[in-house]
Amino acid sequence: MRRTAALITAVTASAALTATAVAPLAASAAASRAAIRRFALARGLRRQIAAIERHTTVPVLLPDEVLIDVPNGHGIEQKWSANRPGWQISLGIGPRCGGANACFVGQFTGTRGGRLAFRSRVRLHGGVIGRYKPSTCGASCSPPEIQWKLRDVLYDVQFRAAGSGTDKQKLVAIANSALAAGPR
Image 1 (cartoon, one colour):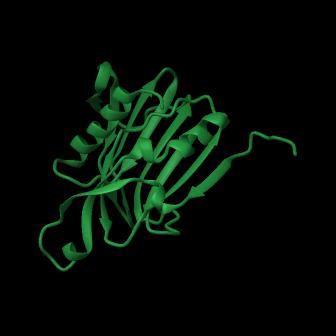
Image 2 (image 1 turned 45 degrees about the horizontal axis):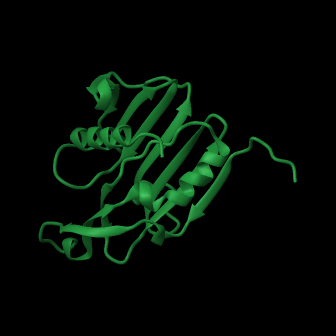
Protein backbone atom coordinates (compact mmCIF):
# COMPACT_ATOMS: atom_id res chain seq x y z
CA MET A 1 0.00 0.00 0.00
CA ARG A 2 1.40 3.36 -0.99
CA ARG A 3 1.81 5.93 1.79
CA THR A 4 0.57 9.41 0.99
CA ALA A 5 0.55 12.71 2.81
CA ALA A 6 -3.22 12.38 3.08
CA LEU A 7 -4.92 13.25 6.30
CA ILE A 8 -4.85 10.42 8.83
CA THR A 9 -7.85 10.42 11.15
CA ALA A 10 -8.91 8.26 14.07
CA VAL A 11 -11.67 8.24 16.64
CA THR A 12 -10.96 6.75 20.03
CA ALA A 13 -13.20 5.37 22.72
CA SER A 14 -14.66 7.75 25.26
CA ALA A 15 -13.09 5.87 28.15
CA ALA A 16 -9.53 6.73 27.07
CA LEU A 17 -9.47 9.94 29.08
CA THR A 18 -9.04 9.62 32.82
CA ALA A 19 -11.59 11.68 34.75
CA THR A 20 -12.16 12.48 38.39
CA ALA A 21 -15.05 14.54 39.72
CA VAL A 22 -13.96 17.94 41.00
CA ALA A 23 -17.14 19.62 42.19
CA PRO A 24 -20.84 19.47 41.45
CA LEU A 25 -22.52 22.39 39.75
CA ALA A 26 -24.82 24.77 41.62
CA ALA A 27 -28.13 23.31 42.76
CA SER A 28 -30.62 23.08 39.88
CA ALA A 29 -32.38 20.38 37.90
CA ALA A 30 -29.41 20.21 35.50
CA ALA A 31 -26.90 20.10 38.36
CA SER A 32 -28.12 16.70 39.49
CA ARG A 33 -27.12 15.35 36.08
CA ALA A 34 -23.74 17.06 35.56
CA ALA A 35 -20.40 17.57 37.25
CA ILE A 36 -17.18 19.41 36.62
CA ARG A 37 -14.51 16.80 35.98
CA ARG A 38 -10.74 17.03 35.79
CA PHE A 39 -9.34 15.25 32.72
CA ALA A 40 -5.69 14.22 32.58
CA LEU A 41 -5.50 15.20 28.93
CA ALA A 42 -1.86 14.54 28.05
CA ARG A 43 -1.78 11.22 29.92
CA GLY A 44 -5.18 10.12 28.58
CA LEU A 45 -4.17 10.84 24.97
CA ARG A 46 -0.76 9.11 25.10
CA ARG A 47 -1.56 6.68 22.27
CA GLN A 48 -3.14 9.36 20.10
CA ILE A 49 -0.14 11.66 20.58
CA ALA A 50 2.21 8.83 19.56
CA ALA A 51 0.13 8.25 16.42
CA ILE A 52 0.11 11.99 15.61
CA GLU A 53 3.89 12.11 15.96
CA ARG A 54 4.21 9.34 13.35
CA HIS A 55 2.50 11.61 10.79
CA THR A 56 3.94 15.07 11.48
CA THR A 57 7.05 16.78 12.79
CA VAL A 58 4.99 19.57 14.38
CA PRO A 59 5.43 19.27 18.17
CA VAL A 60 2.30 18.45 20.17
CA LEU A 61 1.70 20.94 22.99
CA LEU A 62 -1.15 20.06 25.35
CA PRO A 63 -1.99 21.06 28.92
CA ASP A 64 -1.53 18.45 31.63
CA GLU A 65 -5.22 18.59 32.50
CA VAL A 66 -8.45 20.45 31.78
CA LEU A 67 -11.75 20.95 33.61
CA ILE A 68 -14.86 19.98 31.65
CA ASP A 69 -18.55 20.15 32.59
CA VAL A 70 -19.73 16.63 31.70
CA PRO A 71 -23.28 15.30 32.15
CA ASN A 72 -23.31 12.17 34.29
CA GLY A 73 -23.24 9.00 32.22
CA HIS A 74 -21.42 10.64 29.31
CA GLY A 75 -17.83 10.30 28.25
CA ILE A 76 -15.56 12.45 26.13
CA GLU A 77 -15.20 11.62 22.45
CA GLN A 78 -11.73 12.33 21.08
CA LYS A 79 -10.85 12.73 17.42
CA TRP A 80 -7.45 13.48 16.01
CA SER A 81 -5.95 14.16 12.63
CA ALA A 82 -2.39 14.74 11.50
CA ASN A 83 -0.53 15.44 8.30
CA ARG A 84 2.79 16.95 7.32
CA PRO A 85 1.93 20.60 8.16
CA GLY A 86 0.20 19.91 11.48
CA TRP A 87 -2.18 18.13 13.81
CA GLN A 88 -5.55 18.58 15.50
CA ILE A 89 -7.24 17.02 18.53
CA SER A 90 -10.96 17.63 19.10
CA LEU A 91 -13.03 16.80 22.19
CA GLY A 92 -16.80 16.46 22.42
CA ILE A 93 -19.29 15.17 24.96
CA GLY A 94 -20.78 11.79 24.18
CA PRO A 95 -20.47 9.46 21.22
CA ARG A 96 -20.94 10.81 17.70
CA CYS A 97 -20.56 14.47 18.68
CA GLY A 98 -18.79 15.27 15.41
CA GLY A 99 -17.99 18.84 16.45
CA ALA A 100 -21.62 19.91 16.81
CA ASN A 101 -21.96 23.15 18.77
CA ALA A 102 -24.11 21.63 21.53
CA CYS A 103 -21.57 18.93 22.46
CA PHE A 104 -18.29 20.60 21.42
CA VAL A 105 -15.80 20.92 24.29
CA GLY A 106 -12.56 21.96 22.68
CA GLN A 107 -9.97 21.71 19.97
CA PHE A 108 -6.17 21.89 20.06
CA THR A 109 -4.17 22.45 16.87
CA GLY A 110 -0.57 22.94 15.84
CA THR A 111 0.17 24.14 12.28
CA ARG A 112 3.55 24.94 10.75
CA GLY A 113 3.44 28.50 9.45
CA GLY A 114 0.11 30.17 9.97
CA ARG A 115 -0.64 33.64 11.30
CA LEU A 116 -2.06 34.95 14.51
CA ALA A 117 -5.63 36.06 13.80
CA PHE A 118 -6.72 38.07 16.84
CA ARG A 119 -5.82 41.52 18.19
CA SER A 120 -6.13 41.10 21.96
CA ARG A 121 -2.63 40.33 23.27
CA VAL A 122 -1.94 38.12 26.29
CA ARG A 123 1.38 37.31 27.97
CA LEU A 124 2.03 33.58 28.31
CA HIS A 125 4.57 31.28 29.97
CA GLY A 126 8.19 31.95 29.02
CA GLY A 127 7.45 35.42 27.66
CA VAL A 128 5.46 34.10 24.71
CA ILE A 129 2.89 36.60 23.43
CA GLY A 130 -0.45 35.10 22.52
CA ARG A 131 -3.67 36.43 21.09
CA TYR A 132 -7.14 35.93 22.57
CA LYS A 133 -10.68 36.01 21.14
CA PRO A 134 -13.68 35.84 23.46
CA SER A 135 -16.71 33.70 22.72
CA THR A 136 -18.85 35.27 19.99
CA CYS A 137 -22.44 34.54 19.05
CA GLY A 138 -24.41 34.90 15.84
CA ALA A 139 -26.58 32.07 14.54
CA SER A 140 -24.55 29.92 16.95
CA CYS A 141 -21.80 30.65 19.46
CA SER A 142 -18.08 30.07 18.95
CA PRO A 143 -15.97 29.12 21.96
CA PRO A 144 -13.28 31.44 23.30
CA GLU A 145 -9.96 30.94 21.55
CA ILE A 146 -6.27 31.57 22.23
CA GLN A 147 -3.33 31.40 19.80
CA TRP A 148 0.44 31.69 20.03
CA LYS A 149 3.45 31.11 17.80
CA LEU A 150 6.46 29.08 18.85
CA ARG A 151 9.33 28.22 16.47
CA ASP A 152 7.23 28.88 13.31
CA VAL A 153 4.29 26.79 14.60
CA LEU A 154 0.89 28.39 15.20
CA TYR A 155 -0.84 26.79 18.18
CA ASP A 156 -4.56 27.37 18.59
CA VAL A 157 -6.87 26.33 21.42
CA GLN A 158 -10.65 26.67 21.35
CA PHE A 159 -12.08 25.46 24.61
CA ARG A 160 -15.17 25.68 26.80
CA ALA A 161 -13.39 25.20 30.10
CA ALA A 162 -15.29 24.64 33.33
CA GLY A 163 -14.32 26.01 36.72
CA SER A 164 -13.94 29.45 38.21
CA GLY A 165 -12.48 32.50 36.50
CA THR A 166 -13.16 34.25 33.22
CA ASP A 167 -12.88 32.48 29.88
CA LYS A 168 -9.73 34.49 29.22
CA GLN A 169 -8.14 33.42 32.53
CA LYS A 170 -9.00 29.77 31.88
CA LEU A 171 -7.59 29.79 28.33
CA VAL A 172 -4.41 31.56 29.42
CA ALA A 173 -4.00 28.87 32.11
CA ILE A 174 -4.49 26.10 29.49
CA ALA A 175 -1.93 27.72 27.15
CA ASN A 176 0.54 28.24 30.01
CA SER A 177 0.22 24.60 31.06
CA ALA A 178 0.87 23.43 27.48
CA LEU A 179 3.90 25.74 27.13
CA ALA A 180 5.32 24.75 30.55
CA ALA A 181 4.96 21.03 29.79
CA GLY A 182 6.63 21.35 26.39
CA PRO A 183 6.36 18.89 23.53
CA ARG A 184 4.71 15.58 24.46
